[in-house]
Length: 472
Image (tube, rainbow, N blue to C red; front, side, top):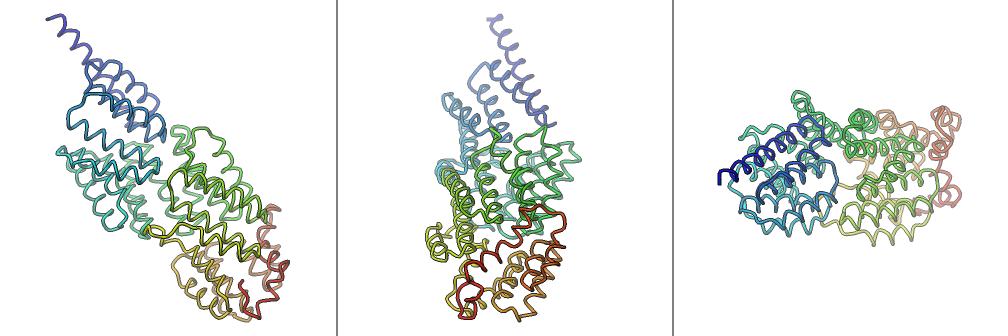
């Protein structure tokens, strides 16, 4: 009996030491060492509760590394263990989290519905985080995230509190509360800096990059994404996220070659998730459309839509189909654009209503010039500056004598430092030398992109049809 107790004690010490070492490695951002220590703890565990403790740490770590396949494997492995109620609840929460990151919202909601709010304060905080992520209403999401932050702060876990603030920041971006989101990201970046947590810093900076991109501040997005890439060596998954933000910003800024190269490299990286690859195909499709490579663009966007559908991301499927409709419209295929609009998933998710792309397409498809102008003026009054810029630009096409529309478009283009748009406006006014000057040393592909819309309209004869009120 004494011998057995000694063996158990030694085994328990091995487990505790390994688990503690893994936690310390994870907190300082050494994920590879943490993963190794958690596996050592699993090997040293003396019962199912200890085995689950090691697996639970491993699941959280693999989610942080975006290795959802390995995380899922550990979840399945955990279901084979005999667990107490508290551990069973924790496993359920982790199962929901993996499903969420896989973007299987329906399955995540179904699994979450089987859970009972736990008594343990830490688990209750995690429960509230997963609940918040699955809520459609922005106000309810905000309240649930804040409740989770309060729980974590109540037990002194500042790291989880700040990670939850980052999740709240992304939620506020979706809700259009950009200033609140930026404050959350900036606050958490400073907090993680003080905590000496480079992983948290990288997450916060990527959040800042995305908030800037959604607000169409592409230079700020590019700068933040490049800053986040400093952490890429230590955190490959976050490095891919940062490279994706930089690729999208580069394309929006007119540096199409760099954007395509970045997106292609991410696709070729075997550690990338299907959802991330879908984002890259989307970016490549947009860039190919800017280069007038319309067939290639449609092929890339179809691949993106297929991957989005497999990832259960209706929001992104809708975004991709709307983008294809816009490209069809630019190519003079109005009937195809209308057909694609009909194919797009309905906007029953509140988060879809923030997307102005459909409104722009429908404005351009209005049957008369008067109706087009009315719809475009409504878009020109929107908060999104690039949307307003495009609306004023298209109003200038509809009515070349509308000096007010052109002045507003030029003012927005200068504010956004959007030389491509300024070049387009110069071309509209017949100022070809000014358009070439604005392009400067940009690549040939970018030069073609600036004139793509005008060239397409001219070749299809649509500019000459404007007087009769045909769709632009």
